[in-house]
Image (tube, rainbow, N blue to C red; front, side, top):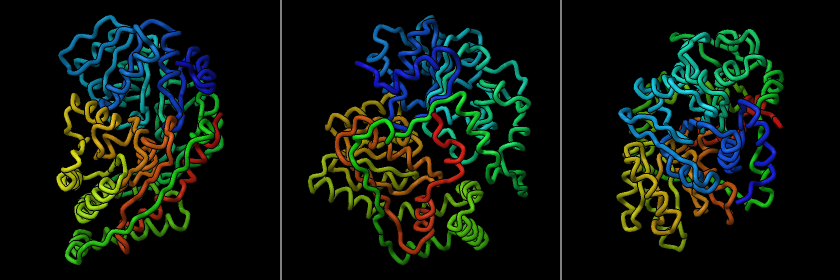
Length: 444
């Protein structure tokens, strides 16, 4: 196996010290991280979402053949003296595990899908970067190098970069170790009844310059010029009058008005409304669940028709488990794999492997579980029962298929109920978020 030119080019940056690898999904981030960790030597701590662990082990066999590896599965295991210790983010934050990790010195720590550490209030972020700017009990302090790898470093707003920049590169953001100082410099805030929220960004050119000194940014089209075409479309789905009335009844009048205002702002180009839309995901969950269930029968009919008609494999993404289970039951004759939050970790690798090897033709994935990190280039068709209201979430899901190694054109469809909130949200999600682009730019 040989590294591509862009993978070789980043090795020196990685070996020298901490680095942000902000490459699009599908550009091949794991290989240079593994090769560089071998060049550094010593002990490597690898933090990752649990669904990616089986795939990571395969990559280690390919790029660091002979390296000794331990995967921590629970809080009772003892960390051994091996080359690479793999831990999920949620297990890392558990006190018995954290104490063991903190008691050691790590030559390298890889934060795979590093946007998982973007929220300052999360327990995993506090365990790694500290609850306060001067917290001595922060795991990153025990790491000689921290490599943050993610294709979506900014999911919503610039404040998600604060932990990475202030802890790993304090010389680039002097005087901004406190999150409040970073927010004041690079974020636009609005006061809500429940506190201040970030509604936009400021001084983004300056922030982009800072990123250029500590990161590399690659887009998929820049790396794989001969990647096949990507067709993205919308498929209208008609639902019953009863379902439509149930959806309308599930939306309080005040919520409907607020959502109308936010979507109108987005359609008018007010980028601060992205944060407001994201904040509405929780109060709208019951409505979106009813919508997903209303579309599930049509989704199953479409999947069955395509597989019966000769499509070799289909990936279906969604958010609500009961709707995904409905599709799985309706498509039972195709023996679907169901990859959701409560799928046992030991089964997940088998489901993905069976799908990629062609022994299963349908993989049904929860967006939060199967929408990141997986390699599903064996398929060229994906259908979205529903989408994440974070635009980067949809991009990540499509990138499971449309990535380096894909040999065929990819066809991605979103199922939409016409004349609905579903349709309006899909329209605004199709717009490119200028704030995120302004932060990331073309960082080289």
